[in-house]
Image 1 (spheres, protein in one colour):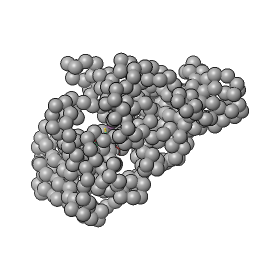
Image 2 (tube, helix red, strand yellow):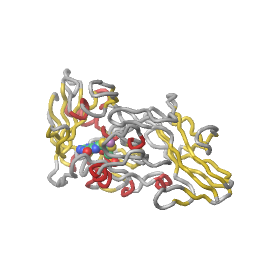
Image 3 (cartoon, protein in one colour):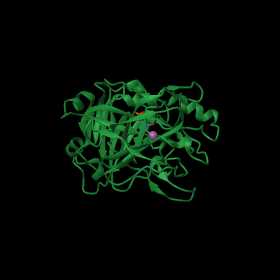
Image 4 (cartoon, protein in one colour):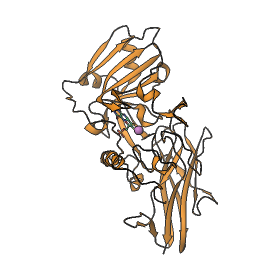
Length: 354
Ligand SMILES: Nc1nc2c(c(=O)[nH]1)N[C@H]1C(S)=C(S)[C@@H](COP(=O)(O)O)O[C@H]1N2
Ligand SMILES: [Mo]
């Protein structure tokens, strides 16, 4: 892979140092160890006292609720592996440059989330007929676009009622750590990460499409400032490989010993199961099918793939691409937009076989 064509600013470096990615070699784990899962925090990590914590459910409901963490833990629980990816993954590879969190490719991770289905809580609160959207408010606060704001995202009532949407209090068998939303977060499988509100403080039922900052001013696919654009929703398919061989320190270019090498990685999509993963060793001219294993099961989590590469001495550009059952396929070249979202162009890894 070549370097980002535009140098990043100190502001972007500061963001990148706070919001770390998942090192690609961690693709070898089906469930990402907590400390290797990527992180995206817009403002500061709020210090929330779990013993005093309450989740408020209000707005257009028959009976507003105020639930402690113990009360949430007493409700029916499910535990599922879910792959989560930031909508800005791939941003730093776009030209012209988009200034924001400069993700390269690895803003992704899979965790086992344990929690209670959101719809049970909504049913208990009892939605009034006028309720059309559910607004989720985080306990973090900051400034963006000259506005002071809480981190807020919404779902339609229909999406919020999907059985897989969770109010999660555990990640990989442990209480949520501070950086991932302690003590409670929303987890919306299949959607880009911005939907899964961390440090969830309040759920409010409203009678119109929510027009908060993270719906109107960001997370839209726009070509220019006056383009309204389409909202960013579910994850497009992507396959990633754990780069083979050994890295060169500065460039991370790969040196691979000659002989058979099992390339491996994982692929996911928010639009259904992965149908196929293909590998190319010549920069995307010739493709061959990789073997897919549905090791974690279910469309909410990534699938492992492998491909045995008979590496003979020379220079290579290794690529992988995924296609999902809905027919979405990764493009060879990035597709630009103003916010630098959903760039799922194929991964390219330069390798020298010695
Ligand atoms: N309250 C709150 N929730 C949030 C965010 C945030 O900044 N504040 N960031 C969102 C974004 S953009 C992403 S990609 C995911 C990242 O989740 P993770 O840090 O647990 O990987 O959290 C989402 N939930
Ligand atoms: Mo994100």
